[in-house]
Image (tube, rainbow, N blue to C red):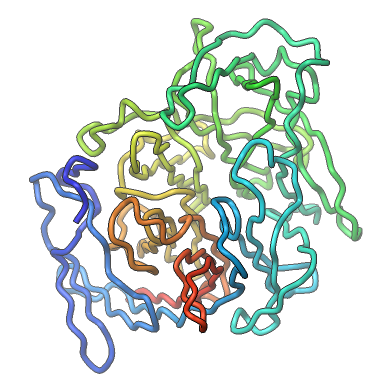
Length: 454
């Protein structure tokens, strides 16, 4: 159990901890979700361990909700030597143009100085993820396919040096409020006042019928957005998910989001910004925002955090926009929040805490309607929502064992890809993989999961 001063939860938070009842019959583990929500503060606890092949009959109020099969984890690749932070982690998964699965992982420092570097490990699978072959160079896997057949992927260029630019006067100069970077000084500028290459959205595009990806600097229209410089560099960071809305437009849920308030000052807390493109990604206009709002009953350190970051964004089958968001963790592990939009991202519900921890949450709605949520750190967790709305979640299912919040068993970053109506593959890192010769090394793993609602 973690220290009781880390995170507290009140009645209504969707965390269930060790109160869950479990029993095994005919190799099927029955998990009974607690029938009541305790009104006393709850502490963060580990979820249901599913480290190897596990069949789950998941019940709520003594009624079956899910049948879940967690397949055996498959090792994609193992580091040949001990690796520093940033290397052999942050995995992704996607389909190559020839239909093969491709897993990719980071092989560079987790630092601004590494932005724009093309350093990745990668492997491909021709049998649905059962076996993997390393490849010398990874291939771009698209984040979205447009109605006109073009494919897009957001990319991050090298930070732009500002000493040769005609920079405007900053709106704000100040030190970071993040304890990790307390001595770092940032200058914030109005997006519209910056040179054109500092305002741009950087995208790779594969046009329909072509075979070569090309880089673009596309236009971003947002009078209240700001970007920052530090150490003489301006990072052009526009990270997040892109999806095709029901009207054929492209919606991007992006971080970091620095907002210029109506009085001309900078909001000190970062938020999530949503942009819409009606010209196949060549220009992007502000659609809506989710500003940071701390639930201090759930997160006693909420007011000390830098804000929202790393949003997962999915358009559900009924047209609802669902966003699950990480909180920055400079003062310790922060909770995940969820927010919903019924008007294509223009307005959003007040974010509410749905889990005690989670970096870079990932969302996926399967064809059977089940919404999958993957996140981590500490460990790696999967959650499911059966009603297609993403407003009620199961307990977390733990992919890796961990001792406490400081136990680095994984980077916690994951990837999801559907493999059928009821199934998907997830990719994640395991920092404590034991090799056949007894060494502990970082490894990249994939796992097939099948989940069927009752």
